[in-house]
Image (cartoon, rainbow, N blue to C red):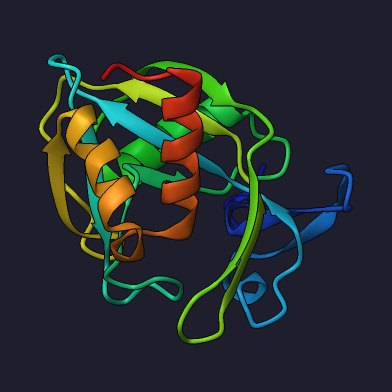
Length: 184
């Protein structure tokens, strides 16, 4: 694949029909609008060797939910890319860490949410957990702040202050807690 061809596919998202079937692609920069089509994404919850979860605060320059606390990292697989490979790639890109033990927890997680600026997120977003032993070196274009937290503390903030978190993180945390999918 030529560099130009690779660059073009690097920034494409996979569009989906209502039933989750791939129906085409669109440039990532153009897809998140006030009328965002359903597309494929993923979320990852990163754990350290002590079982703490990494929460991140989205960069203030992000198009959707700038400055909001959320899960460790999210992303979009490239057309034809395996989800686990996309998780590893985004772990490097957003946090500067190698992730291991990538495991699918919520394969059918789907949400649609509108932020305060009117931008819509509309994603089929399988949820993963992974581990790292490295100290994150966040990409400032993606992450403003980060914090390792005991899972019980995460469940507490989700219960007491959901308004301070991204809507997908709140829904994922509740589903993971109910399924007893993460420690804590």
